[in-house]
Length: 119
Image (cartoon, rainbow, N blue to C red; front, side, top):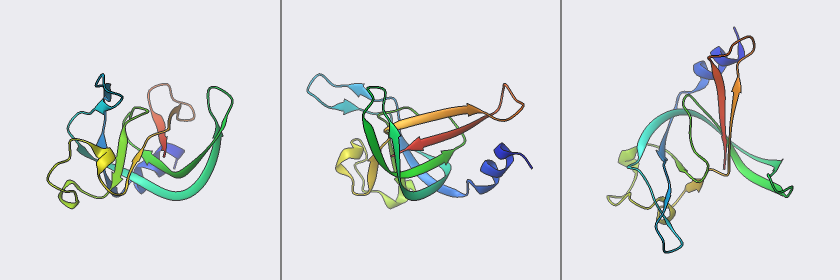
């Protein structure tokens, strides 16, 4: 079993994703409607070097099956677990901004990828 098969097998949790953040002209963002995605959510402190060279700490690593965007937001749970107004994820408890997103080709493949988001 390859790495990608293992990731797919273990993506059994549901998360809510707000993508396509667009600056609203007032210092904030507007987002696409939230959607449920499959994932493997690992709560653990991590660290990486940001593009500017700064060390950034993360609170979770999330394995997903599709591309996500940095500055998007994630919530571990289902849409039914959220309040009725889901237009701004920043105002919902336990939602987190995607600080980094990596998409790495699976070993020996040019068409299959392992995808990770860092919160």
